[in-house]
Structure formats: structure tokens, C-alpha cells
Image (cartoon, rainbow, N blue to C red; front, side, top):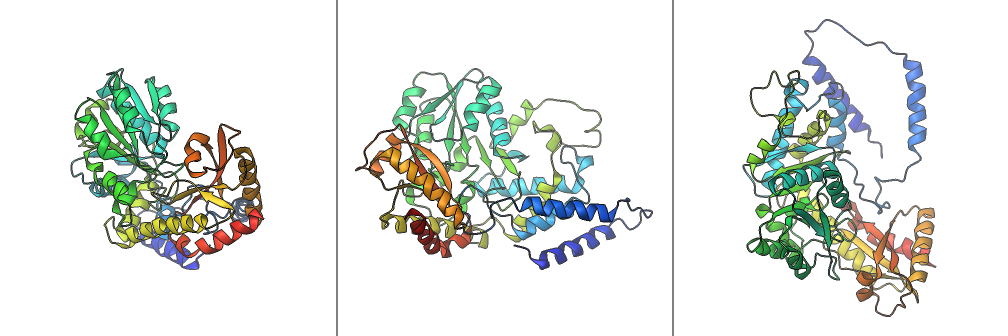
Length: 445
């Protein structure tokens, strides 16, 4: 967990940073070092009350440890504490953010986009839907039943009509059901989920694009979780086709604090048409006075934003370029392979039955039982017993209608079934699937 080399690199970086301000008069803020040490010790003890998110035996929620370069760069920037709302509050970090956003957009095949970092996927999606509502005023937003709940919540906040679309047994948006809604003529935006947080399902973007040729609507790609997999080489054919078509959508959200190896919170919103910048209209004489060109504060709904996030992301992308067949993309492939290996081992298990074959690196599986309610109880029991063995999973509630195709022999006595979910988003998981399954089997006894 602790690498003394990181502390050494941080110290070296701070010394280099300090050298850039050596002409300033000597100034050292005063504080009580003994009192500070006591508080830091208390913080360290309190932080022990966490699951080991950094370890391969944590395979529960979407928590991927930041890369060391991101940790070091983030900490280093805090000695400056830049604010990326205005250029004069974060000169270097604002420039670094622009460079990061350009590289993220190029990953999707865009070269003339508008975008910026955000506090996370929720804020980034809010901004995308806000712009969409201005482009199609009064029109409805629709997303699949497996899309993140943030879209319905955001639509409510923005006062936009919202509806869900049913999904097929693989967790993807039902295209026939989507067209039925489009025929009503009141849909302004379709949210395509590029990796649902529940099942890791990737909506069929090529078919949605064909529908756009018949109906007038925007396409927003929620790639908060799955966006980086556009670089992967181990996707199945359907997922590959969907990711390859991302260049054709109107807006994209991606979360560097998920597969981008960043600390929380770091999201990103991208718009294909940079002219949407004209929608952002506000004036502030005390933050923009030194800016001679359109800058980040003028194309963001958020005001103060941490420059540290941009510095950390810039450092990570400098070390691990966003290119296919590079070190970064190979780690993504290992996550995909880990999920498939884990899924295959569960297929052979007498205790568990996996549901949808994983498109990305998420595997959902049920505990074998005679009834859906007994399976749910078993999942909760395995969840608790696994934690006692330092194997940390997640629970997810799945509609029985979605789970039944994979659990054909089970008696249905509930509307939903509680399943176990493992997010194998650490590349190291590829070497740990056997041990994880062994722990699962022992917890099921």
C-alpha cells in the first residue's frame, strides 16, 4: 500500500516547485507541528475504517486506485492550490486541463471539440443534458432502464421530461421500444450508455445512429464508466462496433476517476460541436479580466474547480498516453480478460450462476437456490461471509425478468433478485480470479 519511493518523488517535486519561486521574500506559515502530528495520527486511524479498495480482493464497487503519478502530481499541486475557474487563478493547471481534454477527445476521434473537466460524471452529465435541453427545448430525454439513475434525477432538476426504455435480456436498450418512443415526436435526446454500472452492458449505438437518420434527436453517450475501453483490443464485436461509432454522437461524458486512474472527483464532458459554447452566457468582472480568449470558466456550469485534478490527469496521460496497444490500453484488456475468466469459472461452479456474459469488466451472478427469494438471501449471506474472509463484493438488485433467461430452473417468488456483483477493474485481477472464486466457494458452504 505505502511505497516510500512515492514520498521521495513527491519531495523531489516539491523542491523543484519551490525553486521556481526562490526570488520571493522568505515566508513560512506558522503552525504547531506537534498538534498537527497528533491530528494526522488520528486521521490515519480513522481512515483504517475502510475496505481495502486498493487490493485485488476488493472487487465490489467501482473503486480503482489512482496511479502513483496521479497521487504525486495531485499532492504536489496542492502547495499551489490552483483554481481552474479562471486563468488568473490557475494559469498552469488551466493550460494542462485544455491539453488533457484535447487528448481525451482525440481518443474518440474528435479534433475540434469543446469540453472541460468536471467534479464527476453526475456534474458532467448534468451539463450535457442542460445543453441538450437548450438545443431541443421542451423535448424529452430518454435512457434505458439500466442507465445510471443520475439521468432521471438530473432531468427532474432541469425540468426536462424524462422516460426510460426497456432493455433486452443482455441489459442493452431495446431498439424496437426506443423507436416506438421516437415515433411520438417529442424526444429531443437519447442517452446511450457505454457500460452500465449494474451489468456493464453497452447499448447498441450503431442502431441508435441509424434511427437518428429517420428522427430528429441528439445522442448523448454516457461513457462515464466504459469510455476508456475505446482503446481496448479485447472487446467483443458488438461492443467494438459501438465504441467505434462514438465519434458520431453529439456529446460524451467520461470519468477519469474510474478507469483513468485518477483521484476522485474527476469527470469530463465533451461536445462535438464547439458552437454550443455560445449557450454559456455569464459575466464576472473580477474573474475574467485577465483572459484574452475563451477559457474554462466561460464554458462550465461549475465555478471553482480544483486545478489539482487537471495536474494529476495531465501527469498520468504524459506517462501513459491514450493510444491503442500502449501500456494503458493493455491494462484495460487485462480487466476484460479477468472478467471473462471469472465468468467462465462461475459457469463451472455448483454454487453460483452468472447472468449476462461480460461486455466490459463487470460480472453479476446469482447464488444457486430453488427460489428467487432464497437466492437473494444466499447472496446476502455470501456477501457477509466473503467480507469476513477479506473478499469484498457488491450486491445489486436485478429485475427477475432480466435474470430469468440465465436462471431458467428457478422458481420465481419475488419481483427482483439480489445478486452479487464483482467489478474486476484492476489489471491485477487477471492473476487473482482463481483465488477469488475459491474464497467465494468457501463462503457459499
